[in-house]
Length: 532
Image 1 (spheres, one colour):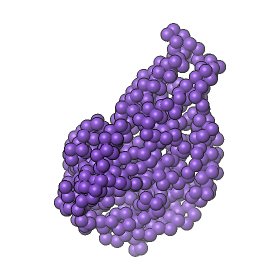
Image 2 (tube, helix red, strand yellow):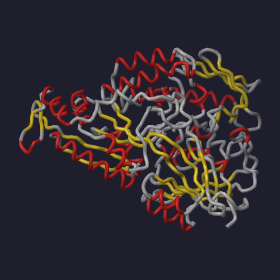
Image 3 (spheres, rainbow, N blue to C red):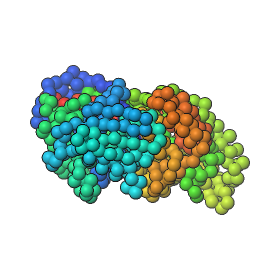
Image 4 (spheres, helix red, strand yellow):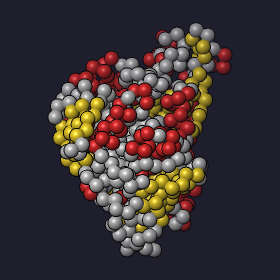
């Protein structure tokens, strides 16, 4: 989830998402990457949950984040080599704690209105205002940002009070809304008002969302446009919650694309379909530190971590196709590669976990359930149902381990949209398996420190002084020069069992009668429909 989590994906993802890279391969027929490009076709994309409200700046749950880029553009884009590309801005310059961008002339919104530097300034003002509670504040846009527009030069200058070493990469994640939508946010819930290559025409809750291609669009990544042969005339996004069903629909041709997380990926591999893939964290365990929750006690967090054989949980979660986690910001191209996990995550040791709880005053009682001060050790594990059968099996494995530790465990499986609501609104969870996938570690800071929900994005209510000190040192250094400090900061989180990444995986988006690129999201201007 990319909120990024919105985020996560959030982030969440995260998209909580959020820049990733794409590799691709495929068969030689129309079902793979071969075949002639054709005009006038409809591209049908499978999505595992309905995103609900479609306002592009008020949630970054990964499903909404994907849809956003059909109708909205960012100021900048990132290519598969982690290089900044043009978007709405054709030139940019970072100068200390400010960045000046030149906005391309001739950009129009879906209703034909001109999009200008003044509109950019209004977008920045909206996202930067804490009262609006945009999840992009502090993630993609530095906190305290202010923007001024120069109408004559069609430039906008964004200033920010603190160091922002990856500011250009962050701006690539902020979708720009046109004037009408800025003036009436309610319009954006089920309609679009953006500069993107497509215009939203239909939103049927729980079933499908339809976009139509805009003519004259020519300001996508590196100047990409909709006049290219093979661009679909229409995009239909179908809500298909079950991954096996989605895989069947891709094989039958009823879907042109769908992302696979679980074992169904193997079937589509064998069919020699086109695929685009990203790597990132698949297994990431968050503990709720809020007052009154078991996770507020560091002994509980560490014991729950030590009770798990994370290597085995990783194997089950990824159906044997994953790898151990190495860093929190793991979407390729990774800004700070390395290994902050090794030696920092509490090792698997059930006896030590029990001793940890004994020493913290959690005593075993009736039925073996521990309690402290009259409160039982009751743990609700929230996991994303998009993880498929592997996710459910891994959750059962964790529940069994924690029951042997003396905890009463409740499993709560939710789809992406429901999980974002639980994490950021209701707060009714103790442990969450929800990945926040980003490529640069600064984008994770609001999720790992600062104000908790509902005032901020720190949904786990984490407070870690050692992490805060390390990120302060890291942010004072330009770009990748601060990577050693960023990785040291992550290690402090793991030692304290604030959040635990435990599984990476290659996530594949398969295509039939279509090809495309995935750079964090499936890039709309990269879609090419194929004859078949």
